[in-house]
Amino acid sequence: MPWDDAAGIMAHPFPVLVADAHPSIAEGLALALAQDDELRVTGYVTALRELLAQESFDGVVIFELALAGNGGFNAVRLIRSRCPNIRVLVFTGMYSEKLVLEALGAGAHGYLSKAERLNTLIRAIKAVSRSEIWAPRRLLSRVLEDAYSKMGGQSDDSEVLALTAREREICDYIGTGRSNKQIAALLSVSEGTVKSHLNHIFHKLHVHRRLELAAKWGQSRATRE
Image (spheres, rainbow, N blue to C red):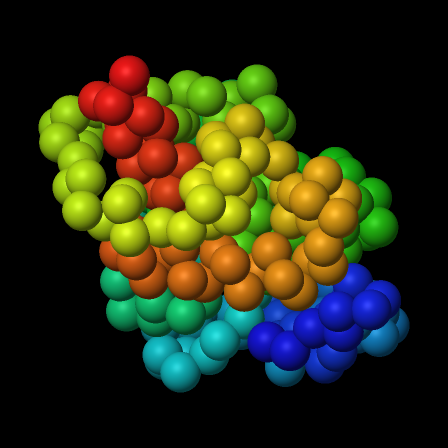
C-alpha cells in the first residue's frame, strides 16, 4: 500500500471488510467506518463461508468471534491459512486476557472489545493495516514467550547476517513493542520508510507477522549473547 512519506499517512484508503453474524450490526459498522477518508470499506459478510471466499482480499477484516460459533479461534487460523493477505482484527463482545492471548496465538493481528469507542476501533484498524499488533502491551511479552518456545530454540544465523545495520536497529525496536510511528520518530525517517524496511526484513527472515519477527529476533539475540 503506497504511503505519503511527507505526511506519514496512507496515500490511498486501506481496504476494510466487516464480518459479523448480525446483518444490522455489520451494515451499521460498515457505514460508520466508511466516514473515515483513510479507510475503504468494501462491504460486509455475515457468514464464515462468505469470508473464506475472499481469498484475494488484501486488507483488514473486522472479525466477530461469534461469526464462527464456538470455533472462533480455529476460524482465525483457517482465515489466515486460506486468505494469507488478510489482517484479522478481532472485534467482539467477549473480552479477557485469555481470549486476547488465544486470538493472537491463532494468528490475529489485534483484539478489541466492542465496549470501545468507534475512534479507538479506527485507530486499531489503521495500526493493523501497518502490520502492527493491537493488544495490551502487558500481554505481548507472554505471546512472544509462547512464540519463542514454539520455535524450538533454533535460529538461522545466515538470515540475520543478511540484515543491514538499519534493519537490525528496527528489529530491536520491534522487539520492545514500538509502533511504526514511534520507530520513525526515533530514527528521524517517515513511517513509509519504516514500512519499506519491514517488508525487506519479513522477506529476509521468512516471517509474516510482527510477532513472529519479534520472537525470531529475540531468539537470535539470545543465541548470540
